[in-house]
Amino acid sequence: MHASLRLPPETRRRLAQAGATALRLAPPAGCLLVVLGAKLWLIASHGSPTPFWDQWDAEAVLIYPAWLQGRLGLAELLAPHVDHRILFTRLLAIGLLALQDRWDPILQMVAGAVLHVGTLALVLAVLLRGLGAGERLALCGFAALVFGLPFGSDNTLWGFQSQFYFLLLFSVAGLVLLVPAPAFGPRWWAGLAVACAAYLGMASGGVALLAVLTVAVLQIAAGQRRGGREWAALPVYAALFVGSWLLLPVLPGNDHLRPATVLAFVRSLLSAGAWPVVAPHVALGLLAAVALFVQAPVALVAAALWRERPGLRHHGWLLLGLWVWVALQALAIVYGRGAAFPAPRYLDIFAVGLVLNFAILLWTLSRAGAGGRRLAAAASVWVLVVAAGAGRWFNGSTLFEIGYRRDMAVIQTERVKAYLASGDIRELQDRPPLHIPYPTAERLAFALAQPGIRERLPPVLLGQDDSEERRRGGLAGFVARQKESLLKRGPLIAGLGLALLLAAATARLRGREADGAPG
Image 1 (cartoon, one colour):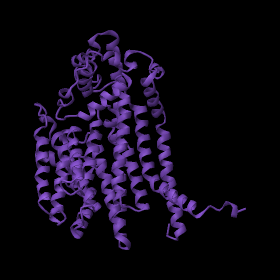
Image 2 (cartoon, helix red, strand yellow):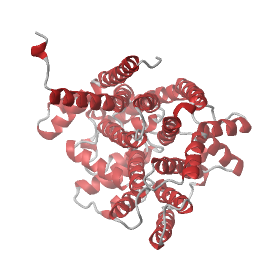
Image 3 (tube, one colour):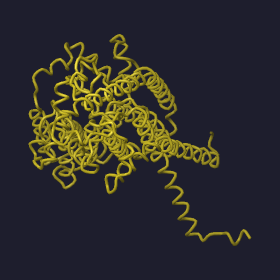
Image 4 (cartoon, helix red, strand yellow):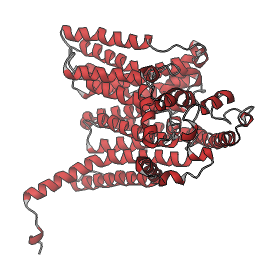
């Protein structure tokens, strides 16, 4: 009977290959599902149907009326928003409005969650390169923790924040294309276009070119970029970066957002480097020491590159380029918004830096061989300290922020509903801070009066049954039903992700036992 169940050798080989591929893909897939499920759960439990703050000017006043009246052009799409030009965020907002013929912040949040997770898939694909099975599993587990906890809750719960995800997407993609590419080749031109697109994600998008310039100079110093074409690329990067900086909109009255003194700037910058281990208000010396500890892994990849002087396609160059990009983002954020640091919306960028540092540790360990025991012990300490800090930050700042946002959102929704029902602006006036979803009642009323806006507000703001949305026919009803289905399944999606991570860990342990390795 057993003989009849034997499979041909070729079939067994293919099954073994399929199993190996599944085990290889399970950790990143599990990580991404955990993050997506966590985001969907947060939106379902804390998301508000009421547009918030900048959305009223950027969408209700600027782009939606222009789109609905058929007069939307580049002037509106590229118009400054504070000190940004958020082309891709505006295109996404218009696309979602066209899908449902409804201004739906919850749908915007869901789209943002999918966009963020898709971008993190690119980040993970880069960071997992060259790692063994054990290192891949460790990195994906750590990434699930860092990206799954809602440190960047502003971006998840505010439908208007997709610019952070576009910034990350185009910057990382640009670095992936440019860092290993010979100058002025097809890949180089593609990377340059993608990196330039980051400027139309957020104001700090231009620093991707500065990060590439930094790495290119180091590659020339290492003797890996030679010839006139490589030297000629440097002023191209510099000119594009300077151009992006000079083209930034300058709005009067924004100086209060910047650090007031050099010491305040330094403290905010060190806080970015030390996140999430300590709070910004600790002693400056402690803050500096913790920042050095958290960012220490970059010294490992820098030392390896200096020692080996490898070719352009060596993975260490890309890891270094990503670290330089995160550091430059921290500089740009602290310079422009350091007075309010650390606002949750910036933490999605610093979370990438945290996972990157762990990836550098694992990459160094994977190359250390039998002599890496001390490094493994140091890496364990690093992970424990950072994980403890992340848990402490989540239990303190993050839980307070998402709870406060939910409470304020309920009040804001009631105030807007009352105004829309009565038309009495006193429903919006003389309210405590954040009790209405815009700084001034008069401007909020003006936004609500824009052509085509009121009838496209979420049904709950108009006192209607939102179940009607799901019963609509055509594409609008389909989108509404899929949105609700996803939001209900957030915990299930996260649970499936955890199951994949556990299955990969179990398979890894069984493999080690079969090989006779110590558990």
